[in-house]
Length: 165
Ligand SMILES: [Zn+2]
Image (cartoon, rainbow, N blue to C red; front, side):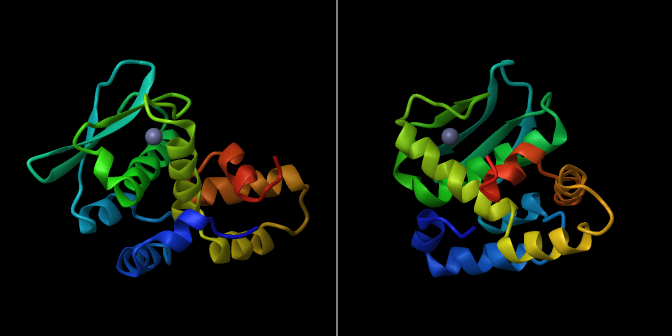
């Protein structure tokens, strides 16, 4: 379990901002986006689209599909924030992510955004704390469910982060 190369490549200023919000669970992703200068809108997007990000006249706007489940919306927001942090040069053309977080861009770009999204949403120190907190008198599956619930992420996302999948 470790942070991604994408995390290590971030501008230290951006990393410091993210770390400030990672001290709270569930982390205030909307406030993080705002501090990074992003506009976030919950929108009715086509059913197969989870989110999009586009820069117009220097203003970067993220749209999240409001019809998705809450945890999914949070993951999508983290994914789009990651595109902003890693792929600034692509934002004027705009990126639209489908339900599998595929876009017209290469899988490499999407994998980078997914890795950073996991690092943002699920900081290792917090996961470790929560695993200990929820480890007593329960089976592993219930433990993962409790930790995921507290972090407001899906169990699948948590298991991928823990390299259990
Ligand atoms: Zn994407």
